[in-house]
Image (cartoon, rainbow, N blue to C red; front, side):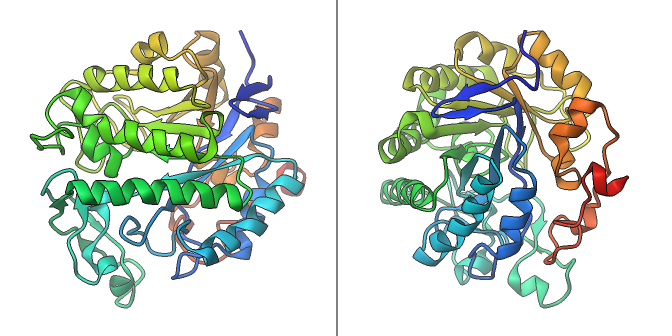
Length: 368
């Protein structure tokens, strides 16, 4: 069986190892969602990953409801990404842009008070920081608003937005794109029956609920080629109020369809009963997906060196995506290879604005 440190072909990308950097929202862009110079430093520091998947990146003003997260729908945002990608490539890395529409998780504050878009007229639990709440304090949050059900015209517009963002990603120099179809965001809101209450061609049966996924992937393939498109699922458990009563019925056929399209890879974020960032009693769908998805399958959630290699040894995955360990260990691949201790991250700096807790974590030589 392969080692974590063996190369792998991820579609058009030849990755030198199977340690991927998972997408991690960090909030260091401008208020206009334009990438900044420190983002180039941050990603270049982590270029030792087999492949970097960027933080979730908005495809439209309508689809982005996270303060200071980057976008890919304007010329200024595309130009802002270019030096970031160039730094990663100069450091020897490879990088995909993760394309994001948050659906009902876009607070109305970001939309001048308008209702956000979703599969159905539902309201997400919890609260989020908005620019208005940040004027009160760094920790202030506002509860989500009621979403409106997407019309067919809305869906057509969203598909155009995905295609434009993919073209912009390639124009910015990215090696490919990943469709964010996980974590309770728009595609996930259509996929899972806990949020999709529709009775048209985009609701009801698992096949219908996966229609938007298929159409979005088809548009991305048309824009950049199948071998530069990846997809992320979070099939089991409740994520931001989104859950499915029978995950295998929707995600296994969807994975089979993705396999038939020849995408670069599929990433699964699946929580367990004792997860450190979410937990569930719903069994993982990965083993069933593995039987139908023959292309590279990447697993994510609560992996360290030992259990990551064990997943490869058991044939459950072809690579592992690491999230939080990459925040505080820019040289994570070297640390996993040598068995060195991992530096813990500081959660208080995940979404702060400066370099602290972002680009100031030491590599092994500096730590010594």
